[in-house]
Length: 147
Image (cartoon, rainbow, N blue to C red; front, side):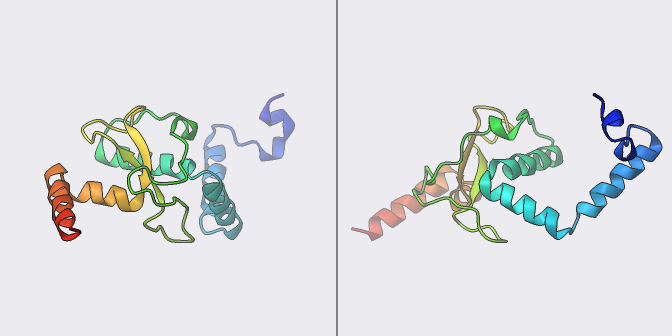
């Protein structure tokens, strides 16, 4: 049965009036406490939903390749960061060093299957703020201090 026949008063269609109604519905979501609460619960349940959406926005903004069709195409969020071995969890209202983030393994490639991993925000920032030589120098410096 079509959506129009199921609930004719709620059917929007692709007419100008239908598009206007759809825009009103979307506007009503913004700042709506119930919508925000539901969104927050979904993000805590599976952070990949929001990780994919944010990555798609970044890819469009930067003009890079993005071929992740669904959040289910992303790898599962591990319990611990594979780089720093710290627990991963979604922060309350703000992201923390332990928040899961989507990382491109090779930054020359876009957000494509096989080129993405989920790591902690702290590890992702460390990777993005320095190149391999910088990170190696930091490692060697810290290694000397621990002797």
